Length: 132
Figure 1: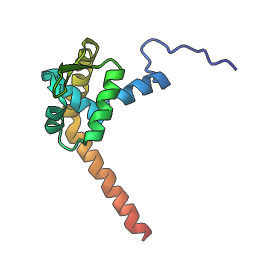
Figure 2: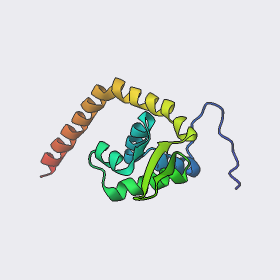
Figure 3: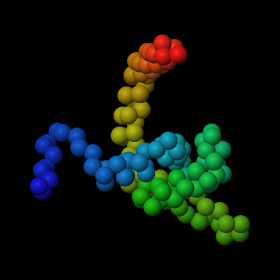
């Protein structure tokens, strides 16, 4: 059977190509890096100091991934010693609005999310103590 059905207008369908891009540009570190670069271009160590908890390895990998996807641009600004500056690309700037919408959603619903987590954890703890 050939699955060539089209997604009806207004229906959300996340296919593998969507997941691939979302995984690469909206993960934990990518959003933090984009937040910093939306404010100003930064050198590697400035980014590293500005993002608590990120390792050098994670920062390097995330910057490369964002650069590969056209979201971040890398520019050599000095020869000796070599200095590199990262800036958000024009394509990357188009992510600002949808990310802001998601962040606003989180802010609006954070209390409900916390209550749901507590209820879930309490129920799991109660179920665990009943099984013991």
